[in-house]
Length: 128
Image 1 (cartoon, rainbow, N blue to C red):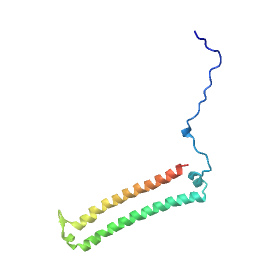
Image 2 (image 1 turned 180 degrees about the vertical axis):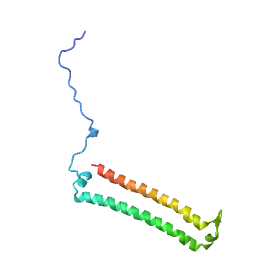
Image 3 (image 1 turned 135 degrees about the horizontal axis):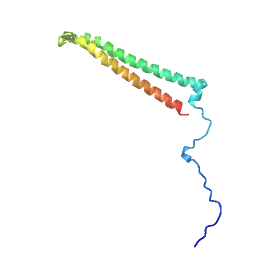
Image 4 (image 1 turned 60 degrees about the vertical axis):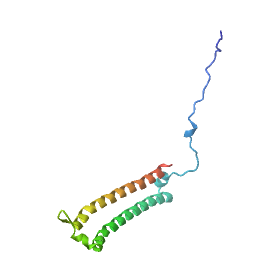
C-alpha cells in the first residue's frame, strides 16, 4: 500500500482569460471628448447634425420633386383630366390617394435612415 505524504495541498493560480484583456494605450474615448466639450467632441456632434440635416434635405427634396411631378404629368398628358374612376376624376384620385402613400413612404425612409445615423454615432461613442 502507498502512503500519502502529509503536507499542505498544492496551490493553483486562477486568472481571467486573456481574451478579455484590452490593450492599454493613450486612447481618447469619444464620449469623454464630448463630455469635456473639446474640439474633437464638437466635431463629432457637428458631424451627426450635418448628416441628419443632409438626410432631411434629400428626403424633402425627393418628396417635392415627386409631388411637383404630378402637375407636370397632368400638363404633359391632358387626356388624363378626362378620365374617371367610378365617376371620380382621375387627377383627384392621383392627388387625393397618391400623395398619402408618398408621404408615408418618405416618413418611413427618413425615420429608418435617421435611426441608422444615430446608431452609427452611438456605436462610435460607445467604442471607447
